[in-house]
Image (cartoon, rainbow, N blue to C red; front, side, top):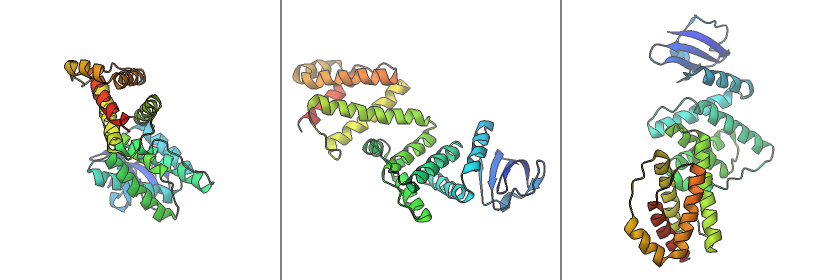
Length: 276
């Protein structure tokens, strides 16, 4: 038996759990007539999850004011699918962030709006596992809601999943995805090429940029390529100079120092792409 702490609505309440402290319990009629301090049998709940922070509880309560209970139930199933796939308990905020995002995305689709995602290829390359999971989720929701959610939404869901798995703010994850897209745009403009997004050299470049940004952010970038740097500067001056242009953009966006060694790796990637 658990103790009721707060009733959010007739079907959702916050209870005190002996192992997880406070949990959200969801079940038809579960909260009806219940008062704080009363006991409730945990096994009668259809779903339960941990929502520790008071701020998160308040946001979830606000969510229940405009999201219907059927959609809440569907989203809890979706989040369970993610946890089962990655064998992890996600940060509690995903119950609010992903539910709110998809609720409004589907609302816009019903209103006839399309969903555009200019960063879809970069997201798939940067977070392949999350992207694959997002594809499964969108397919599941299409079946359950009898709707056709545009492909662009897969990328947005993948970013939410990555944010929850890494416990990095969604804004930061979005910034990095946009940064990679901006860098690719600068490369195309500077070299006068249109990069095939399925080309293996493009895939390598985006994956490299993704890992480089992570290492720079964590300040775990210790490579030293001084000897090779002078050779590349002499052999491929256009690509070498462009690599430094990209480095300056990265430094400004990340507000961190990018090591000189990055010029070597970028020059090699750029030289391969320039052959197109």
